[in-house]
Image (cartoon, rainbow, N blue to C red; front, side, top):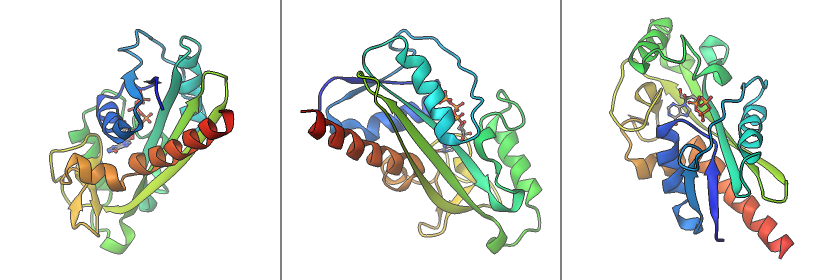
Length: 202
Ligand code: ITT
């Protein structure tokens, strides 16, 4: 594959991971800001896929490159899958993750391990230069830890404990996280979709 992907995200943590995950495709990944595109579409969808597609379509208006977008979130079973698609907006978009993470731990006070189950979910949407639209989705299962641990990653990573590693995703290296994460898996599925599409359209 050649060419570039404009990624419709303003989240620096996401773009760093995405560039690493996509490095083996031969496609350069640039953020919409680096492509000189400024849009802030209202994420008023009801699913991760809808919100990802809203972002991808908004940026696709301004470029002939491949456009992709990520919509993701943390679902905590004990809190009826909150904050879910509202993960970025939980307690206010500008509230620090120190405060958001501390609040979630507090809401789970006294809740035992087996009821602390949670997952990170990620949908990736793509709009190809010919208008073709694709979406993929993946998740990683874990549980909410009792305190914040680790300094890698971003957002809710310090409280998302993955039993098979015995660590939070903020304690994993970038490579380790990308190999197993919701975003890593959803982007691997998108790479396959793109490959199929390339084979068909050749
Ligand atoms: P863009 O819409 O510009 O991409 P955003 O941060 O607003 O950026 P979302 O609406 O998709 O993105 O919200 C996703 C939120 O879910 C994100 O801000 C984090 O709080 C959380 N999240 C998603 N993936 C995560 C990860 O890998 N590690 C930690 N938190 C994550």
